[in-house]
Amino acid sequence: MRPGISAEIGNACGLRAKTLANVLILTTGILFLGGCGSNRSIVKSNFIDYKPAVANATNAISRAIALGSHFNRTPPAKQNAYPEIPSDYTAPRVRQFVREYAYTQRESMKRYLARAEAHLPMVRGIANEHGLPEDLAYLLLLESGGNPEARSPANALGMWQFMPATARSYGLRVDSWVDERLDPTKSTKAAMLYLKDLYGMFGCWRLALSAYNSGENKLNRVLCQEDANEYDEICSSRHLKRETREFFPRFQAIAQIAKTPEKYGFPLLREKPPHEQHELAPMSGSYSLETLAKATSISRDKLLEMNPALVRGMTPPGMEYSLRVPAGKKEALLAELGRIPEENTQRQIIHVVNKGESLSKILNRYKVDKRRLAGLNPDVNLRKRLRPGDKIVIPVEKVETKKTVRKPKRLSSLN
Image (cartoon, rainbow, N blue to C red; front, side):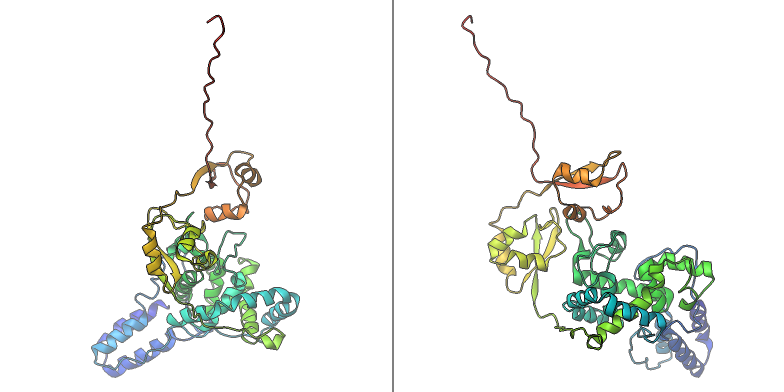
């Protein structure tokens, strides 16, 4: 948002009501102007002290409405605070990426569309709740191919490819017991909040989506280095990675295919709104989903599907956790809990990496699967070379200790 807008509104307090109405109309028009082609300037600094969900706390439109009510004016009709994402489907780079996804990467695109069918209605619903454009739902195709368990080389995880620190800043729990980046619904809500904040920072969907890929601090530094305000001024900047430079046109290409798949020879998306109802059962203590499934006649696979964030297949110890169960099963589960003994939590140790020690040696030593190890260590990128001093959580099913065996003394005939 341009800094001068708030000042202009503040100085309008002494004007006549007719003049104030003009200021309100002008301010509202500037705020809801979509795209990056406007003359809006971006506040740039060498470092952003980023705090989530504060970009919309005191904006120009809320002040304008407050001033309007002071003069007994009827507030304007409610409308979405975020414009539609600009479409440049005829741009050469967009057409290039359309050809790439539709032909060169055809099989991959087919898988992406098939996986996204189950999630797109849910994502659109959450986007609508926040007043965001529905086209943002197609961002999950570019980020993860619609795979809720996708993990990037940089250790980003989930359908929206959150890094651990960013996920925690938007209220997702990420630890060795629970990783809510794997939960499609919870991670989607966090992603929409993040996108709202990015739009509040940059005032433009082209820049906001580019910042989703590169990070807001990185994109802000490039704007400062290029002395730029618009997306067109940095979309080919050498200071940005190629992945970020291509991110927005790739998003437009993949969204175009997803909107009209039959045009490119793909089957129509059979999107169905989520119809399965569930209840939240408060759990205090550690229980394996397998034990809970047997006690309540619920399929273990069903419980795992409904609770993808439980990376160990167990509820976390020492705290209350809301477990999703099929509708009508909550009371039965809570009634059975009194008869189910709390299970011993899986033992774990902290392994400190020594000099010259590799991941393969650690896996062989403790007989543990790499994927399981990655789930227990969300802050450690196991795709990179481990450094001496790194600490890794290792699950230990059974700790074996050497017992001292006392051999009976043989008595000789002389004794």
